[in-house]
Length: 86
Image (cartoon, rainbow, N blue to C red; front, side, top):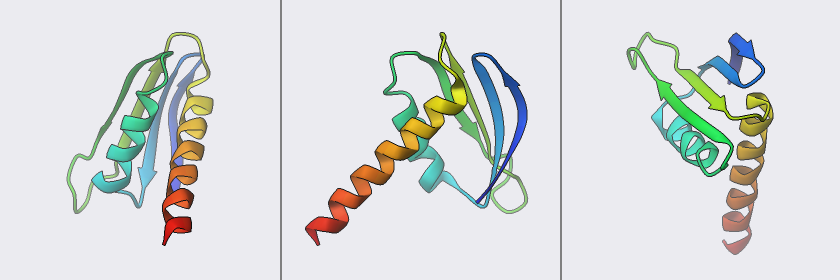
């Protein structure tokens, strides 16, 4: 996965997430939206074969990159719990 920051403001981030598709981005979007400070979390894949997925996050006051990082940490924790049960 390669991440490129297209736009970054105090409470807004727009990123390209190369190498990912709906499987991960839908999970990430849903996890980001669990944060009460998040106003918008959405992604767009212009074309599944040639387009790079774009993730947009807007918050009330938190750093959007920190919100994304926290969401990823929660995802990893949940995956670890499932793996430990196997």
